[in-house]
Amino acid sequence: MALPTAQPAEVLRAWQKDDLYEKQLAGSLARLVPSHHASKAVPVSSVLYKTFTTLKDLQTLGEEYSGIVQVDDSFHKLPSFMSRLSSILLSAFGENLTRKILNHLGKQVESNAYLKPKAQNFLLVVLKSLNNIVPQIESIHRALSYISGGPIQISKTVTGINYVHVRPAAAAYYAHLRLLGIVTLLHAFISCGHSVYQAKKHIDDMADFPNEVDSSKSCVACLEEILNPCVLQCGHLFCMNCCYGGLETCPLCRTPFTKNTVVPLMNYWPGKM
Image 1 (cartoon, rainbow, N blue to C red):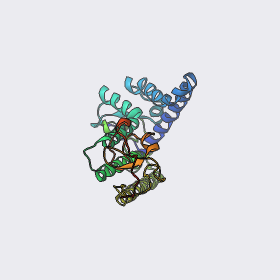
Image 2 (cartoon, one colour):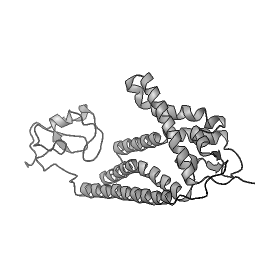
Image 3 (cartoon, helix red, strand yellow):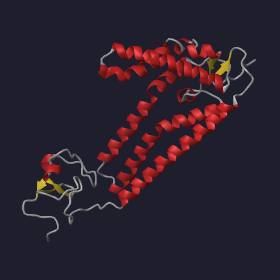
Image 4 (tube, one colour):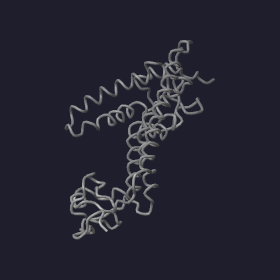
């Protein structure tokens, strides 16, 4: 006979307790390490806390407090070691890893000389929007767990881990928790919609941006009058201070260049024929 599925309120209570203990542990670790490593205390404390509980087939303090136990998707067995390990690693490093992957893809797109400027701009805006939406994905998952039950952490859902009761629990469903889930879901959707709107607006602005500035007297990089004009290997013109400054790619077409490929135009003035 299978144990009853844990109610959303019990799962939330266990998660809040564990989150409190992890933050206390992170605060203690942050005081023991140099200040420039203090930011790493949060994921390290999460891994340590779950290693000495979940990874050893033990209840966490929050789970023991709420009377729930982790099970696999069959609801008859404890999760496998690999499922628990994957859940712990995804919980601690999943968001940062996702952001690093998105940033890496952005750099790859930016340095790709074979993509057209419009395609590059579109992909960069999409990747940036996805980076901004990452926290909202967590909020949506949390809201769904409030409404229909299941683990609050995405890492447990991905690895097929759920919860059951091991002692009698209150029969009430906690209607206010369902309402909280609906409000959280609406807020997350509105935030996602705002990010998509900003991305579309940015794409529209880029579509109206000129791709050629040969006949312009303003440097697109610094938005000032071009002084000592220079041309890049892609054919776009900028002032000498920008070309030999911090630029590494053309601001218009994203083509990478080196300082020794910049050609000063000694007898040329933008706009003159």
